[in-house]
Structures are given as C-alpha cells and as structure tokens.
Length: 77
Image (cartoon, rainbow, N blue to C red; front, side):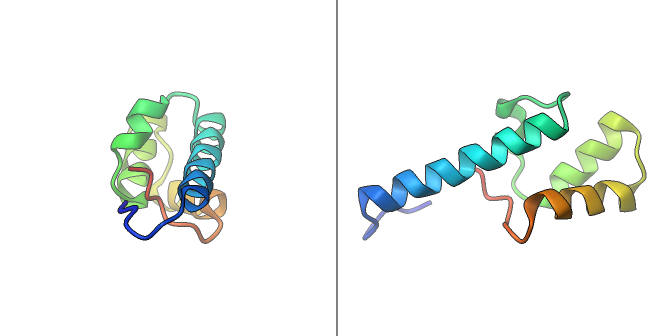
C-alpha cells in the first residue's frame, strides 16, 4: 500500500480495517496465525489453504470466505 498523498488518519483507518479483518479470519479459522494470513495475496489463496487445512469442499470454503469478507478484498499486506 502506498501512503503517498494519504493522511495519517487514512493510514490508521486502513491498519484498523486490516486488523479487524485479520481478527475475524483468525477467529473463524483458528488453525491460521496472523503471520500465515499476511502471506496470502488474495482470497483464492486463502480458500485453497482452508480446503487443504480443514478438508472442506472448495465451494464451501469459497462461500465462507465470501461471507466473512463481505465485499472487502483480501489485501492484508
């Protein structure tokens, strides 16, 4: 994320939203750490790892991620 032209309040808001999303993800899928979640570049990587780690079907994992993200993009980095 580039902070050029962004105010400190904007950056704090982005950090707060990222932290809230990470907390929600860790609460839902406790087998992931914050550090692991920060490595995912997009929601498809998260979905694939949920399928691998939890053994759920792809469509179920994708639906659960979509519900949790609620229109947000997985842009944690």
